[in-house]
Image 1 (cartoon, protein in one colour):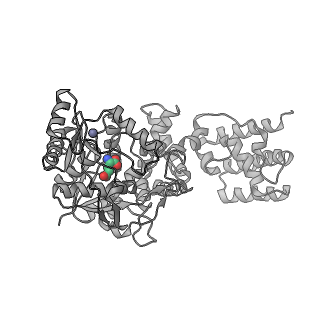
Image 2 (cartoon, helix red, strand yellow):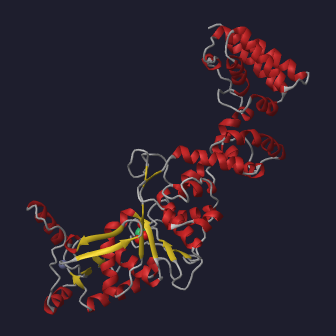
Length: 493
Ligand code: GLU
Ligand code: ZN
């Protein structure tokens, strides 16, 4: 059997981490099995639909390098792959069920349904939901409604007796009493639009889907879907509901935890390979220890058996760590290209960059790369080169364990050691030793000397390594800033 899987998002919002993980698992499973990965757009909910969401779906998958074998744009033998282009088909299938007595027309008005709901709530009735008012209309009753011009919906007849079971690869058998399934759900709305359940089941069947991998929140829909497959006389695909992605607090991952839209991660400067690697590990592992996977490796080694049963925590710090690793592994040229837009956005350089600016970026990248977690970190880390905004708050110059007086002396004498050393071409290590000796003499830690020097030169307490910063600024500018730092510290308050 050839594996055929699909990612079937509804374009009602931006692609988020959880959705993308579903896409990746489907994609990697298809690739590892030599099967097909299908993209299907489930846009039956026209009220929540947005063009922006659809654009975001395509551009996110494109950015991640996830190509679909069949789907919108590329087409395929089971198309169209956008549900709104398949509406006639759903109506035909719904009417087939009506002819077979497995579904029926319902003419109830919104007011009537609301009244039923209210009464059920008031009587605290165990029975909730549609009261099957139209389940057994006579031909005359139907004709009367039709005469009144009422457009019916089609409801699926859910058995009131018995149980429905479906098998889930991860969770095992899941059984539900039929009477607990929402009574007779609408499968076709009065305007002819299918609801999610009908369209989803028909398409999975017609598209030959063998495995349904989707979020666990769809488990409650499972029994109804199985009943629909049975009503049509179709085989039920294999189910594999994926563990929830949650924040550190055990709640479903949401905006409260931080960014969830992949687009936001991209904007901040995460690399696609870091997102692919880390997101895949949220709920899956190969052997419990291997952490680094390229997309190509996952295309070979992904297995369903590696998917965890329990909810998985999305750890932003861990993603930062992965991203830092991938940034350092990337070539300087690539990082230079990738940070350029951030520097332009910050107004540091021209767009397009001049030759001089390009040369500066090339010098900047090696030290900056070492300290970046995300590409946008290039802006604060390199700001001192493009903008000269001295730190006026004297306390920033003072390291832990030192004081203002010692800091003045450290900066004043340290600057002399540094400048004299650099001008006479001494080794960096030798200069550092002398600065450490000065700290010893002043009775402070080494950082008590380095911190004021660093703050004076880079206008910040967090910055690139000192000698890299000096290299980027040049000696004259370094000297000017050191002297200015001293005058800031010495200024009488
Ligand atoms: N359109 C549904 C969603 O957005 C698809 C669910 C499924 O995969 O069956 O989650
Ligand atoms: Zn009705």
